[in-house]
Amino acid sequence: MRKFTDKKLLVATHNAGKLEEMRALLAPFRIECVGAKELGLIEPEETESTFIGNARIKAHAAAKATGLPALADDSGIEVDCLDLAPGVYTADWAETPNGRDFTMAMTKTWAACEDRAAPEPRTARFRSTLVLAWPDGHDEVFEGKVEGQLVWPMRGQLGHGYDPMFQPAGLDITFAEMDPAKKNEISHRADAFNKLVACFEA
Image 1 (cartoon, rainbow, N blue to C red):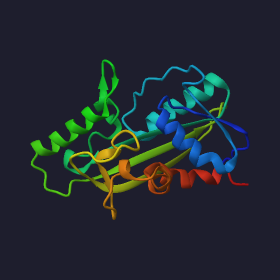
Image 2: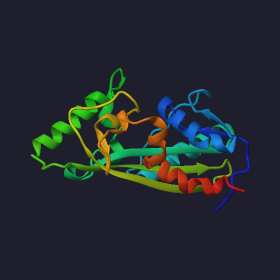
Image 3: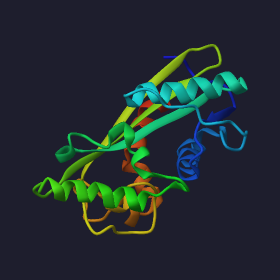
């Protein structure tokens, strides 16, 4: 595994919530994190059908455009009764002409479960794939997940994306009801990040 020896890392995301989550996770390593939006980078088209494929597109595009090592995440929610949908298309389910509307996406997801008369608990998981890419084309891949179930109606005002309808296994609150620091300890991104840190450790 290649070690990360730079002091600055580009987080290849335009999602403010995801950027802050990454900054919090990387804070102990004293690495300066800058977001793709801050550097005016365009979002590359995600043309792959896997989390790894799409994360690689984003990480390598950002590293090539800036000359900085870049960390990209591709994540989504898989619902068992929907044949693992929305999966890599999680963000697409939220797309509107005026930006992403995750309340609409969650409503659509629950309605799809209802249409199938899926029994409860409606099990699901968040998946995260992190790709750390260097300008020379090398990359390292780290995958994480967290199991849980969907709840309705949505609960909580914290978090982002599908957090208000996802209740992690073993808990009785949703990610959106959880203190962000606690979520950062158990999330799918944290699971992947716990594997990534080997790149940063001396």
